[in-house]
Length: 178
Image (cartoon, rainbow, N blue to C red; front, side):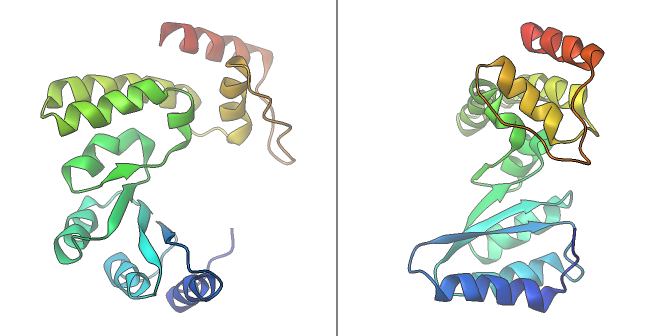
């Protein structure tokens, strides 16, 4: 993954904004070299920027962004920490595992919004069981779950590997349990 400096990232979103009048969401992850808050703030100064998806483990930045820019849409990135993001001000989330257990993710969000944090936490733990089964694996393993659900996800390109037969059986069992 190429590492871009903060100015290049900000300029990228400025270029996108210049090409459309549609609202845009930026994606910020752990590759940001500087202060995540400063980069997100500068991105939000760009016309058409609706908000940011943040895939970082530091929820202090979530709170700071939401406090300083209450009108921005702030989406949680780490699937395994959706409830943490919601507690710190995220408006929702975007995650790979959400495609596999959308009802569970809706339970996390709706339970949290309704003030039932215990139910939200139970749903987060259910989602985390799925995530733990493929932790550290490439996108081909996530695609296999979608194939089990009847979606043709195409082939994952090299050097990514496909799940082994043993892994496939494990994933089938995980999906049955959930």
